[in-house]
Structures are given as C-alpha cells and as structure tokens.
Length: 457
Image (cartoon, rainbow, N blue to C red; front, side, top):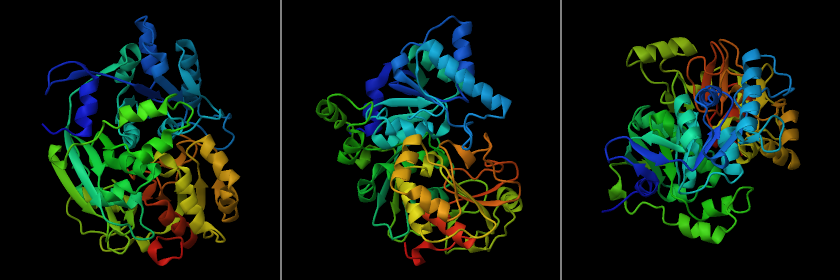
C-alpha cells in the first residue's frame, strides 16, 4: 500500500492507540516561549512532576519582547511572563535562548537556524505557526497550554491522525513573485478552511527549486488555510541547510541516510490532491480580515458575497471594486516568522536601496533572530534600511501581533510581511495588508501598493 511521507513519520512515532482514534505519539522536540508556557510549568509544580526529557525541549522569548531598549519592559504582564520563563527553564533544566543572548529570536526562526529542526521528527509548540518546521520533512503543529504541560511531563501527546492533502505546485515564478504569493494565492483560491482536518504536503518542481527559507514561508502560512500541519519532503537542499549548525547531528552521513526514507511514494497516496500552477501567478495583497481575502495586484477587490465580506470592508475602510494601489499605506512592517529571515531582508533591501520611503510612513524592520540581525549588518543591510528612512530594530515577533510595544495605530493601513490580517491583530483598530517583502518595500516607497513586476528589482 502506497504511503505518504506523513504516514511514515506518524507510524514511527505511535506508542499506542488504534487508527481512527486518538493515538499517543512520541514528541522529538518541543519549542517553548513565554506566552503559552507559564501555566504548563505551574501545572507540573502543583502535581510535583518533573520534565521528562529536558534535552528534548528548547525555549526562547519572542512574543512580548521589546525591539527597542530590550531590557526595559514596561508592560507588567509581559515582564512577568519573560521573568517566569527564565525561572522555569532554570528550575527544570531546559535550554533557553534568553533576552539578548546570541541564539534568541522568534521561536520558528531559531529552531531551524540552530539545527534543532530535522527531518522525520514530530515537533510541537504552543504556537499555531509551528507548521513552519514541516518544511524540513517533519510533522510539526501547534498545541494548547494543557498539551504543553503533557509534553513536558511525558514527551508524548495524544492526537488523531488527520487525512492528507498533496498540493502540487509547478511552473516557474515570474520575476517579482515569491513564495508568499504562492501560499496567499492558494488560500485565496481554495479558502481559509480547505485544509481543515488535513495535513498538507507541498510538492512539485517549483518546490524542489526553492531554498529552505522559501519552503518555510509556505509551511508557515498553510494553517491560514485551515490545515494544522504543512510539510515538504527533505532533499539535498534540506540536508545542506542543516549541516554544521549548532545542534546538527554529529554524524551527518548517518543522519541523511535515515532522513532519506521520508518521502511520499506517489501522489496517489494522498487523500486529496490540489493542483496549483505558478506560471501566471501575480503578486498578492490582502484586502480584508483573513488571509483568504486577497487578490492579485492587478485585480479589483471582489464583490460583497456575504455578511463577513461586508464587515471586512467596513473594518478596513475599503470598497468592493477598488484596487490595492488605492490603499493609503502609512505603516510598514518587515519581519515575523513568515518573512523575517535573511533572504527576506535581502529582497526588501534590494527594492529600497538608494531610495527613500514616502514622508509620513513609519517603517519597522525587525530581523527574526539576533544571528540574522548580525548577518544583515555584516553585509550592510541595516545601512540600506536606515538610509531609506526605516527603523532598524532588535529581533522579536514585534508588530506581527499586538502583544508588545510595536503596534499599528487604529485606522492606519499597514503593509506587512506577516501572516495574519485579522481585525486588531497588529493593534486595536489596525488595518493589515499582507504581501511579500518586495511588495511591502515598494509600498513603503510609493505610499501605496504597486505591481513590483514592473519595477527594476
């Protein structure tokens, strides 16, 4: 019987339980951050339990951290959560990339960056965008706080195996079109619930030609289409990325030999297949209050079909039939676990080089980790951004979500490289428009979205 990569990884991790029912599966790696872990650790203390495998857990601080004057945390709840994580990891013997440390960064950025994320693993975190790690050929998904406690205590989790969708992505991307446009295009076409109850695997020649950072962008946002998990078969690109990283296997040859078993036998093994050609794909921009409310840059916003559309237009202050180039951009955000990696900053800097953002626009550039920040500064990206009028910040989740000082003011339209455009996501009353780093950079210059394919980049 033909099997998917997902089937093979899942089978190796089942401890007990019947197919079709919740099964107890082993967790290879749990990533922790300051927001969803305090109650879990407190639960361990109340029950007088220890962490089963401290070496299989790794923590960092990202959601609440300031990106200016990082040790001056004014919000008392944020300060308490960060201090609590530091104490909890020390008390239970868990590795921590703490405030200001060389390994600190967004949890879904540093996992791959440190070589913690590897093929064939089951990876969990109390954060919905954990699917990012599936780009390495793993099963990775977000869990709730009570489940975080269960994993800490047992290094296992109860899960019902989902069905599988294979998304066949093929063709050649036009200049100015990126991985962010692919996933936004898929969600816009298929809807925000097409993946509900499924684990998704991306495959095809377009995927094979992608670097790891592009693959992570796809898997990161697949949850916005309703899927809990997204993955990509590991290949030489994957193996080369992991090699020589801090927590990479000591014997890479042996590890690669093991990793090569994780592949899908045939597309016939998927429960469902979606075909997506990128040959004619255009840059996408979101107009509404979920990632499915997005259009190609050259197409008008859709007609109102239901009450949800009506409310979305009212919230963002736009009208059906208008186009993305009519959105008055006043705030710009480069960063997040979707597009805060070095390659994303390089793309944005290429557009901004020798140019200046439009007067009246606030532009934040927030690297996904301290190592990315250092690498960017080494090649002069920080100078390009600052000379263009942008603010060069310290790493963190920043303006992706309104849990730290970096918030978009009410009523302001923000061009953002992040993953969610929910009402209030970037601050109370904020109006978020998702796009690729290149599109966001161009919007910063012009004060509106333009078709980046027509710019010299």
